[in-house]
Amino acid sequence: MSAIRASLLLTATFLPAIAFAPSVMAQAHEPDPAAKKAFADVVAAYRDLDSIRMNSTVTVGLQADAAQHTGSEVKLEGIYGKNRKARIKLRDFTCYVSDGSLQFINEKTPQSYFTMKDDGSPYYALMNAFVDIPFPELAIMLGEEDIDNVIMQLHPKAPWIQPTSVKSLDENGTAREEIDFTSDFEQLSMIVDPKTHLIQTIDLKVTGGDLVQNGTTLSYHHVYSYPDADKPVDAGTFRFDPENRQRVDTLVALMPRPVAPQGNDEAGGAEMEQPGELVGKPAPDFVVATLDGNAIDLKDLRGKVVVLDFWATWCPPCRQGLPHLQEVENWRRKENVDVLILPVNVWEVRDHAQDTPDQRKKQVKEFWEQQKFTMQVALDYSDDMAKEYGVSAIPRTIVIGPDGIVRNDHVGLVDTLKEEITAARTGKPQSQHDSKPE
Image 1 (cartoon, rainbow, N blue to C red):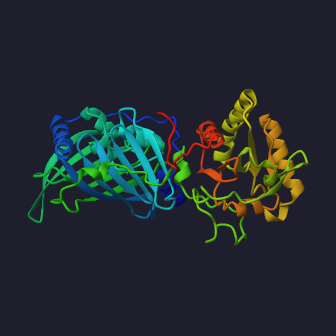
Image 2 (cartoon, rainbow, N blue to C red):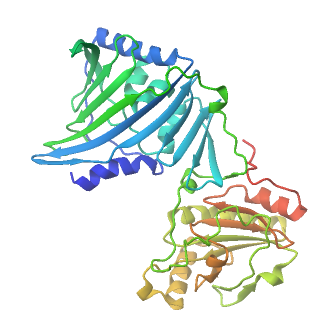
């Protein structure tokens, strides 16, 4: 396995959830009753606390023969309360866990937030939201009630481990307890304080299965600290207030993705509008070409609601969202709603040497016919319209009212367009963090 793959194991922490079918399945070992009880005491010690601040770091290593690679340290900052409440921060993300739902924000996209129900399990909701969160404390604090399930959830890279031994240690006069977990391919060692039952370090080594090749060892080294242990945690710590943030409809929409064409110094600069900043302002004027050879002028559309959707064929979230946009177009036609649904293709040809109007038109026409879309589609051949609207990430959806004022501005997939179109037509005020009924 290459060093690149080792780094990807951490990069994957914030990718949309996917599932892999295991080709090699480890066998669970017979648990040792004393070790299992020791671990149950650890879980109980954490969950019996009214609240706790707990920070951890994890470092991933990979060793193959004489070659060794150590990845960068990744830190998780967490505050946890009873009844599986939490506020956790990992990289640029903060997640609030409370009362059956999870709310996510990203400090690099401060205008937006994402929310989802946990369906009774905040731990599995986090696992479904992200490919991989290799932090055992999440299972301990947010996992299931049954101790066997917590053991299975303890580390996503070691689902088959069982507690197989426990022993006392004396390190320079300091008492420690070591709980070992094993399976055919994994060995996990947990060092805890025997008085408080709080974890100090965890080390996991994976030597087989799907993750590593023969002769290779994948390792995770976790270190724990408990800042402000005597400081009480205010109950408001776990409450999320969206303030002026706009709700987005996918978690990936919170990730900053500057995808402007390479070599374009104007795109992505300080002058770019942030999502939501256009709301309440007059929509920038535009004249844009359509695939069928006509042109659309915003000035001619006064009195009509206009929905702009900036997209490109190479953008996976865009491709995912366009069928939903087609559904809105079908609804518009069936209900005779006075609105223009206008997908606007931008940044289509990323190779500047090949970027010509003919090439852009060819790629869009082939894609549109393949998908059998019946919406009118526009092509921003010069990307000037994207610049005027401050587009720095796609998909970007903007709803313009009949008065020419921007009513809504989304980055990411949107499933509230019908409601927003109706509100824009009737002139009903709509907050930037209004959400659809659950």
